[in-house]
Length: 158
Image (tube, rainbow, N blue to C red; front, side, top):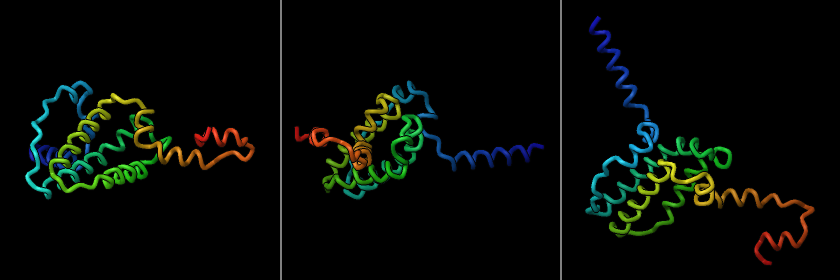
């Protein structure tokens, strides 16, 4: 009766809390853009700024499978490689100034919103985040019958 429906509801709500739903699926595109954004508050310490960066990285990793499906990036790069490239991008920013970290975090959040809102096209993401690995993979297979002119041309010597 009533107690079984309550327990069923409780189990469903526990399962819903454990599953992650990308915000692009949860909200429509216009809802993402028109949703009120809380005022960005500055980090008070370096530890707080680092915590925010780690949290933001986790948010991106959670969104990555949805972004990869939306932009058909599975053809070019796997989620693992994309995550590794993103982690490398985070590691290249060496700063201990919380204000700089907050500024980079703000830029990253706006970039994620732009990507989730589908304001980029596939080639934008490939050229911005995938191209180094993709180009290295494609260039390594130079045909044996390629002329020296084409080799020099592709390398930028001509």
